[in-house]
Image (tube, rainbow, N blue to C red; front, side):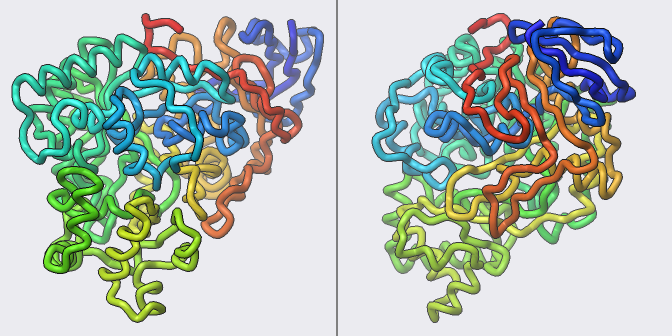
Length: 531
């Protein structure tokens, strides 16, 4: 064997008891799991006192572009992630044509940046996956983004799709799945995906179910109407026969304080009736998105240029202000905006650096402006390429949902901006440190299963997510007494402590706590599609 990890406490991904074993690796695979001291190999790694687990699977990642621009990917490698799922929230860069790609580069700059000189040499899902295979630090799966598909077939019009347009969307989804995507994502508070009605989503999900994929929606509201929005997604799954994975499934804003049990009952009732439903969450209270996402959907119809034109018109600005501050826009989850809870955390132009780390309300006071005016002026000056944190979460909801029987972990992490949300660097060690060791919300073996075996089953990965002979050697070795997230809101780009080794396909990406720079990851293709 290439390597023997000797005497580790193995949390195998099932949630069963943690027991000491030797684990042998050879040619990128786990070859043996045996009694301590029984294996020999070319190299022996003493793991006494450490926990060996399957590599963590990030079920909700926004590394679509940064994984290519910075393939060493320290943010994820340093916290033990060996696989992540891209193409989230209905908006990503494949499939595209030249026009849609140009639009997305601007629209998603607050999520992913738009690096100068970057080589955009793909258009299809398959070509994007091939680009990943040039060399990345972790494995990556992909979801076909429903909003991007709607841009291609319908454009930015706020109306039901015509029969021919729906047929084209179904064809695009089927092609993406045939080329290796694992399912379909939606961002139903983001334009233009939010313009799809329930019937349209059902039709697309029928295609996904027929191809063995799953549907992962960012549903229509996490605030007012959140339960109704969750119920719509459950109904889409039931009517289409497509498995459902609820993205960052939380209950936010003041209207939902303490209401997690209502969501869990909705899901349990559906599961007990035979539904196939899973979910992911991140272990933090604030959310993050691009600042223009708060706008009402009508204000963004027609695309970014039309949006900027509306924001330059005084009468339209007043209409938007009233909707944001008085009634609550659909983009802001139906809740009137509290500008003190919206913190700008990333800008593109150095002249706006003073806005970073401050709420819109605070910056407006300093500038002598009304908050809405500062908001509009910032969007215009930044050409919509600004990101923000939304301080709207509730700890009791976070804890209740992470205990659910179908829960998995997802960072929802954005890697760009001046002060990105620390979840991009800290999600997985934070589960182990705060919610296992400090609070006891989850047991250690159970938490590892949430982050490994459960997501592998949702993805239908035949050889990942568990410590078993024959499985890919995606592994993480950590000290359960010291593992911790160090990323904070003030200093978000900080690696975890207590994680000594991370192996991706048997190659060390992290060794003795230090990154190796190895690029042993590759695209994962949905079962039956192959590499």
